Every structure is written in structure tokens, then in C-alpha cells.
Length: 310
Length: 310
Image 1: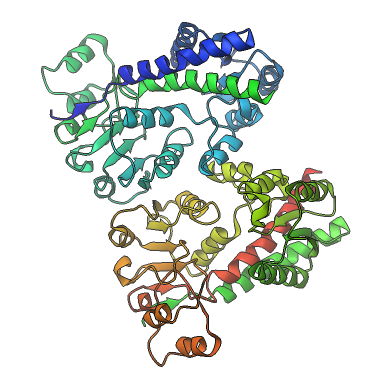
Image 2: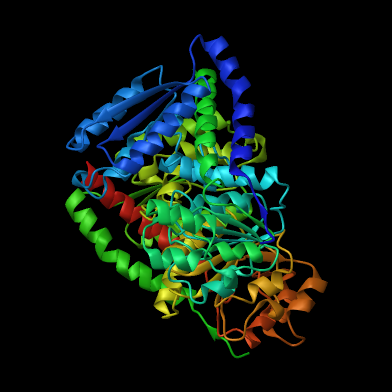
């Protein structure tokens, strides 16, 4: 193990410290705190945890967080009506609809809901207008996870300009916006995916390697140029003992955790990458904490922009 | 010279052949032809030529083309008012504002005008909603030049999936949408630019190399993997004899053309690349003709979608 570990909790705290005075300033001048509406449909256990953490972090930061729940059997129309109400509300500066939606709502439901959110309140940055503005180099609200990765790189003084960056994964939530943010900071950016031939060879061209594919331990040392910065966006819950034993050495604390709990959360990057990378984000404790911190920042930004615009 | 030359006129003719029946069908069912509004501000000589060619091609294809001119001294407000009128018009299915706008309108003028065009009529694909939809893999109206390049590659059976593609240039009009279109077709895509170190080394990883930087003859053989497909998007008018003599051999017809006219149009790719590339688009006669053909296709698509939507 030689890689420097990049501490997501420390960077998240720095983001929240920077947001605090903006919250106070907004609250003083608007006569109310910035408001974040969170919509949770159904009772997916992971979503419950994510939403609980968002509500808690928002309250700690002095936001007004309005959690709106709909039952798992709610119709898409009911959800769209709720979004329309939040769009029209003056007290809600940001709106977030927690994914995934219940399957019964249909395959296109999430995109239809994201399209329906007022772009000025779209703190997740999923509306096509916000995606387009990001690509055009005039971002307003940018997806939280890739934004957090940029803050992390800057916090640790890792140079982006003139670097080669490789992003594995082309999702709307991480891969594509990540590529655009790196490109705007003058990295030379390669986007890889499941159909890329010889992925290890392509990945090992990277000075900055971002793994966002959702496969536990997929990125092994053969993917990594010695000394590279490796950003692990994956959050995978693993219950298969064989997989876990491939990932962790006998006698390691992570393996002991697994033996005790029957499950362990691991990233997309194999732990052995720590022997070769220059810098590495751990899972948990790396990219994860940044996402919520940027959500708070986006909410305050949306609030401040709306008030100026009004 | 060993590269196969990819014939833009032939591919453009194929696109227009495919559009013809759609024009007839629309005209029969709507009782009017698809309508394209073109706005030309001032009297930039290159713009005059581009617009003339668009008007001519549109008319030949059976579109109604409405050329609206504003004087070079027109204000941004006058231009925005004209765009608003075309947005509201039922007879205009597509709207195109020819760039560049007069400098007097200010630096942000073009983007403000593109933002003001109804996304459903945005046949250039520059509105942030259309950019966002492209990134999200549900494109509606896509910028004409990169769309044309995709048609060219498909026409000649050049495989995109599983290829490595390198795009040099990160403009909104070509570079970024080109990268997205290649990515959606399962290429592994690298975006390079003026700040990329060792550009020849990066470029020569490409199976498909797209040059869109606006520098005459910039892409020399050292940028090209033997056998690669090279797409030259550049259209550069060169008047400097030294530059021209570096590009063309003594006794070549292009050099003779230059001696006679005092200027020559060349791409971003050096002619010597023809010795090493597998396939190459010439300039002129490569990508150029595709742009207008796709503009016609976009107009008919916008028309058909609007009528269905109404």
C-alpha cells in the first residue's frame, strides 16, 4: 500500500464550511432559509438511507428540507403533480426526486420526472437544459457526484489541465458529466465503457482514472499507470464470500467485517490498486461524502440565483 | 497516395434522396411544404455564400425557404424580435440564424439568439435542450456537420462500435457533438484540443480520427495510425504562398490553382496524410456537402415532428 488516500469527509467538510456563510447570507436577506424539496416514492431501503442522510445534512447546514413521500403505488401523474406544486412554490429553491422510481411507473418515468422539474430548481442537474449548459461551458446546476470529484482533485492539488483523464462508464449521472468537467479544465479525456476493447490498456494511459461502472473490484492494478490518481465512484454491496475473498487479504479488517455482517461495501476499484496508484479515493469515505455536500451547495446556489432573478 | 477518398457529394446525394419522399409526404398531408427560415445579419462574404447554398439546396428539395435579412447595424433586440416572430409562425418549421453575427452585437449575442430559438425548430441543434437531449441519448435535432460525418462513416461501412475514435477540437458545433455521437455508437472516444500534450501520439491511437480545429494542414502523417479513417472537417482559406507550398507538391493541380487565384481552400489535414490513412475525406468535397444535406433532413424532421405534436 503506497497510494495517498484522498479523504472525502475532509473535502466534504470544506465544501460545507464554504456553503455555511452563503446560507446565513441568503437567510438574512430573503427572510427564510434556502428550501430543498425531496421526493421519495415507495420504500426502497437504500433510498431511505440516502434520503435520511440528505435530510440530516440539509438541516445541519441550516436549509429548510421538505421531505414529501408518495406510496409505492402512486401513479406517475400523481408524482408529476407533486413536482408541479414544488415548481410553483416560492419556498422550494431546489427539488430532488430520489431515484430509482418504482418499476410500476414505467421505464421512462424517471426521465419524464426529471424533465418536469424547473431547470432553475434542478439541484441534481439532470434536466436537459442543465446538461446542455454544462456541455456548452456555462454550467448552472451540475450533477453532484462529478462536481464533488472536481472539488476533491482541486483540494488535493492534483493537476487536471494537460493531464490525460480516462472515465470508465458513460452514465448521465457520473460518466458523461465527469468527462465534460474534466475537458473544460483542459484535460485530454477518454470515455470508456463495457464495449471498449482492451480496457486495461486504455485505462492505463490515464493520469486521472475515474471508475464509475458499478462492478465491485473491476479495476485491477493492470488498469493503472504507476502513480496515477484513481477516483473510485462505485458503491457496491457484496454478499458473495468468493468475491470478498478475492478482494481482501486473509486477516484484513475488511474481511473480518464481512465475516461478522455477511456483507461489505466496496468500490469499483480493487484494493490492490493501492499498491500502484499515486492517490486513491477509498470506499467508503472517498467520493460518497462529496455528493451530499455538493447537493447542499447546489441548493444554496439555486436559491441565490432565483432570488437575484426575481 | 493510397487512402480511399470518401466522397461527400455522393453521400449528400444519398441523404437528399432519402429526404425527398418525406418532403412530398409532408407537403401532401400538411397542404404546404416544410418551411425553413434563414436569418442573415449583415453582409459577411462567406456567410453570403453559405446562405445562398442553403437557399438553393432547400428550394431544390421542395422546401419553402424564407430568407430574412437584417442590416449589419441591426440591434440584438431587433434580431431577437425576428426570431420570436419565426418561433410563432406556423409556416416556419425550422429556424437557422447564420453565424457569425456582427461584432457590434456583443460577444454573447450568438448564444442568446440560439437560446431564443424554439428547440422544436432549432435545425442547427445549438439550443441547450437539444444539446442535453443528445448527451442523454435521445437526440432530436443534432448539429448538422457531426451528423453528416456519422452518415458518411455508415455509408462507407466503416465500423464505429468498438473502434477508438479521437476528436481533435472541442467546439459546440463539431467537436463535442461528434464525440457524443461516436460514443453512443460504442466507440471509445478521446477528445483532444490545443492544450493536449503530444497531440500526434494521442491522435495516432485512433481508428477514426476527426480533425476539427481550423488550422490548415495541422494534422500531418505523424498524427495518423496507418490505415486509419481520417475525417477532415476543416475549411481554411489560405493565401500565404509559403503555407501553400508546404501543403502541395510542385507541379500539383492544387498549387497551380493557387498560383492562378491567389487563394486555396484546404482542410485541417495535410495532403500527405493520404499516403498513410486508410480512408480520407477530401477538402473540398468531403464533409462540406454533408452539412447542408443534414440541414434539409433536420428541417423535414422538425416539420414532421411539429405536425404530429400539433
